[in-house]
Length: 566
Image (cartoon, rainbow, N blue to C red; front, top):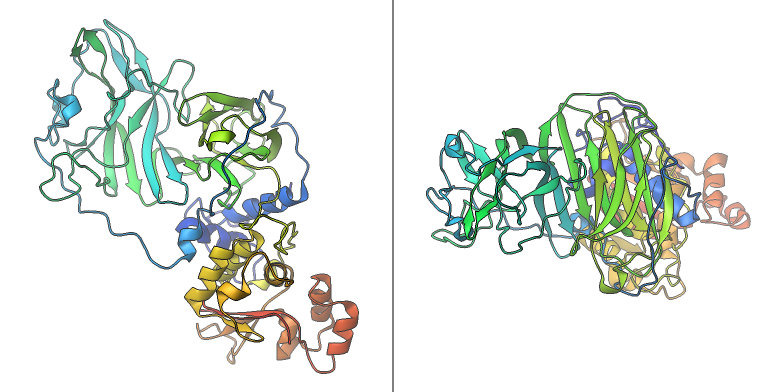
């Protein structure tokens, strides 16, 4: 299964020579994750292992013995998009969010029938619906859409509604308050009557999803605006209530308000209260890469519970596979997984997963909705309280295709070894991870952007990044060479006289290209095993020094050079 176990219980940085370095760095690199966070350091080894497994067509079995009932029909449709972490390697950054300021007294048009207003005392937020009640029934979760054209994040939480007089034909909303006043009245759910859906996390049959929007409906997007609200809630501690709006009679609505749930917002999302747990085995979350369609993660290992469902790519007409890993509680009792078309709520597959700590997966074929480029949500039902850590991903079942169609890229089907000793410093590992992932994905746009951003010297003969990394490759193997250099050989610091990393050094792959290792039998064997030279070529070069492909990366994360060979 290509599992890799992290050794640092506190998720901190390890010694640069430690064997967990690549896992820590890749996890911190992807999506700007803080390497000290619970979702950071261990994240990438499982992802990289899964990428290797996908390329090898690795063993796929039942998910923990759970019954599989995935529907799959022949379909035609959308192609793959750029990997979601591309924004991390391209120049530029999004514009800062507008300053948050509650517009006291404002009432969204869809709530004009009520006495709910922005800035109202939260003590005045009470139930008025006869016989109705609503209660939180699961952890709050983020629902992130990141399809390459900008990302957006909304919120959800399972709500259990006890019916009274009348009927409920719209979804409940999440109402946020801080310091005793209402700061967000939730999104407009009245424009889609009957559009109630099950929550993506937790809950049981009959529970519904309470919806939270990407921006507060109590803060204007622009000064003086009263109808356009695009300002997200700032980081901080809040109380969140699920509020339902049952119809008491023709044209008459009332409110049913739940008890509050404490929620903390920060850069990593929304966090509900939890209890620290240390169930074994420890494992990280996958790093989103090209070929991932959807990813759901749940972390209950700290005193703050974090859950997120991320849409990464629309469905395409290629066979898909589902992978999952779960730990905590009864190993034989786990949640049910459903694959849901986001636009319609149609369930196109379902399965069970055992929480025994083992990663497992199954191929599910081409899914319904592929012909229309549908987006898929992953839903977890009946999550046991004992589950401490879990992830589920929906991926393309085969190796990711290159942006130009696949076989014209030399790295297609490449199987990396990932020599962890080849990453001498955390920053260098971060830069190298970006480069090697772009090469392995045959992602010309990302590789070109990385080279342009660093002003990489491309040798021999120069050439622009667009020329050198053009796809299809014109009889060159640049993508394969880069992937093999950074994953299958060891790098060595040069220019470090005192033996300390000061930030001005350079790391060179392969190490046989450095003075210190030019006569090392092991280093020469390394480049032969990596396919950079044949045994005869290596023997011929020994007298005068290594003349094959090499890469140099500065300890300031600058990709200094790539040489295809002398």
